[in-house]
Image (tube, rainbow, N blue to C red; front, side, top):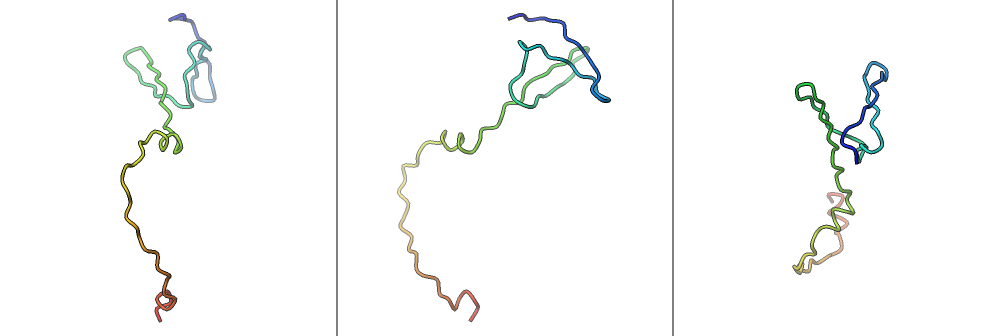
Length: 81
């Protein structure tokens, strides 16, 4: 892969934009940009894992949960009688 290539700058509304060549495409939908002297540094933001990916990464629990009784609700208690 090339490490250097000319790219075009253009106006997008009131902003200046940069056309990024395909070989330099960043993953994801967002990036962090910062300026160091005359250089612009662009870094992709790692996507946060979804709930299913997060749950799949957890180790199963080796604990037994205590039995919890499930008595029927007292109908008088619900209405303050």
